Length: 236
Ligand SMILES: [Ca+2]
Ligand SMILES: [Ca+2]
Picture 1 (tube, rainbow, N blue to C red):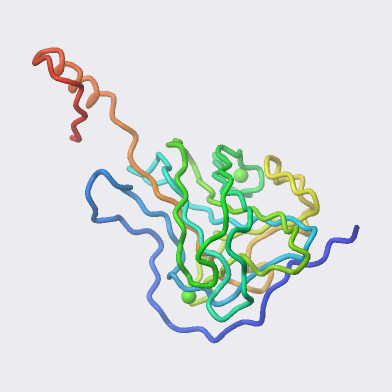
Picture 2 (cartoon, protein in one colour):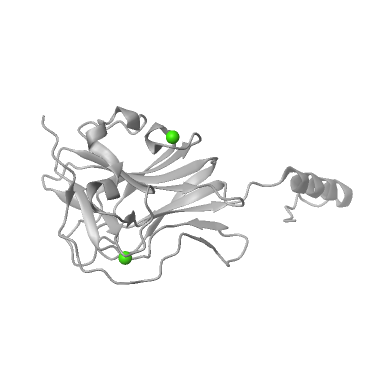
C-alpha cells in the first residue's frame, strides 16, 4: 500500500502572541512543579493522515531539575475553525525517554495510556494522568492516532505563531506504525514540523515534579520514629 504524504490544512492567518518555552508554575507544592510547553495555547494549522494510516505527533523537552518525575501529559485536538473533529476517538498518550540526544526516533517508550479525544477544535488541552515516571535526558510527550474513521483527519494541532522552536516538534506516520520502535518508520515518513515546511509546535505539554530527596525521607522517617507520628514528607 502506498503511503501518502502527511497532510496539512490550509494555513490560517497568524497572530503575534507572546510564547514561552518553559514556565515554572507558581502553584501549591501539591501540584506539578514544572510545565513543559512550547505552544502559545492556540493552533493555527491541523496536520493529519488518511484513514488506514497511523500517526504520532510529539514535542521534545530537555528534562529540567525539579521536574524529572512526569505525572501527566496534556493534549489538544484539531483547531478552532478547522475540520470538525469528533470527540471520543481512540488515541494513545505516550511518554518517551531519549537519553542520547540527537534523533528522538530512537527514544524508549516508557508509558502508553489509552485515551479518547475531547474538547476538539477548542484549543482546550485535556490533561491525562501518567503513573509517576522519572525521566532523564530528553522527555518526549506524544499522541498516536490510528485513523480508522474512513476520512482524512487533521487531528494534530500546530501552533504556528512565531517564534517557533525548531528541532522540537516531530511527526511520524505509517501503516502499522510501531510506537515502540520509531526508527522502524521509513525516514521519508518522519521528521520535524519545519522539515515539512510547516514550522510550528504542537499543543502538547507535560507536567513534572521533583524526585523526592532521600535525605528528606530519611529525616522524616527519623522524626516519625522519634515522635511516634506517621511519616511526613518535608520539602527542604
Ligand atoms: Ca498560536
Ligand atoms: Ca536520540
